[in-house]
Length: 365
Ligand SMILES: Nc1ncnc2c1ncn2[C@@H]1O[C@H](COP(=O)(O)OP(=O)(O)O)[C@@H](O)[C@H]1O
Ligand SMILES: [Mg+2]
Image (cartoon, rainbow, N blue to C red; front, top):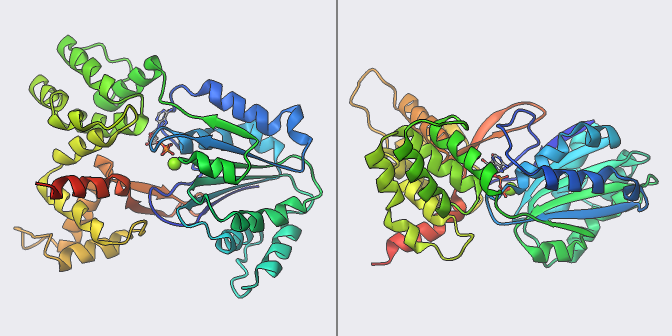
């Protein structure tokens, strides 16, 4: 039984079976799978693994590859995926887990003890893999323990929790026995990913000048897949030497704060976004951090704010807004969220992480 759950907001993820090609990561994938299903794995009732790494480095992607691996799905009776993000609400997670396991979220039950007991019964005698994606909570241990209690009471050995996080302090709090520190992709894999993003062909062998510029740009991207995809999407829109040189020589690269900083790449992508899309995207910053955006609602707000105009009387503003929305998805500024169970598609803001810094940068004289 595979269930995917979404608890909240930004760059929300799910265990979606149809994903673009994943480059490299074989070693990490095999390591995690062996920890989940290997002989050793069944010695404890419940153990926790953590994938730790910077934003965009590929933690969710790796967890997803593992989650969808047949060795893993055959080993566990129940596989659950929960997108956690900043607010770790153990009761909400339990409600969501119950909904997926029993078809009833038991919303009327507010008492944590009762919820824990129902969840304990629902997972009883079944080996469980729970993926908690993008966890940030690193101080309130009691919340973590409350989520764990029903899983710990399971009478089957070898239950696992796989957590992805940017913060080593999270791995510490949850007592992760195994920690996988994820770095950028290796050079060869990264080069393939870049060519796929910028040329639409990982085997591109065409114009030498473009390839030479690409090599210079790739150095700045630090092996980070999100950065490669973002800049690649920009470059592929205008495949010509002049434009690519402009991107390569952009002043933003100089603002790199450390070896893992991908902000310049994201800022350059934003800089070349058409102005009307920049405005619509920037407007999203007025919402609280981690607000989840619904397409229709967002388009209506853009219209109310006067961000969408039409020179064509026969074209509805809603339709134009909808096109802007799709354009932002295509540029990678909004990311589609697939809900595994229903395949309902909505969208949310991708780059709120860099939004704040971007605004700070722009605000300074
Ligand atoms: N190994 C990879 N091969 C191809 N694309 C990748 C790889 N790792 C990550 N990506 C892409 O990079 C982007 C960011 O990856 P993600 O897993 O969301 O990063 P993180 O969870 O570390 O923030 C996504 O668009 C994802 O598809
Ligand atoms: Mg992630």
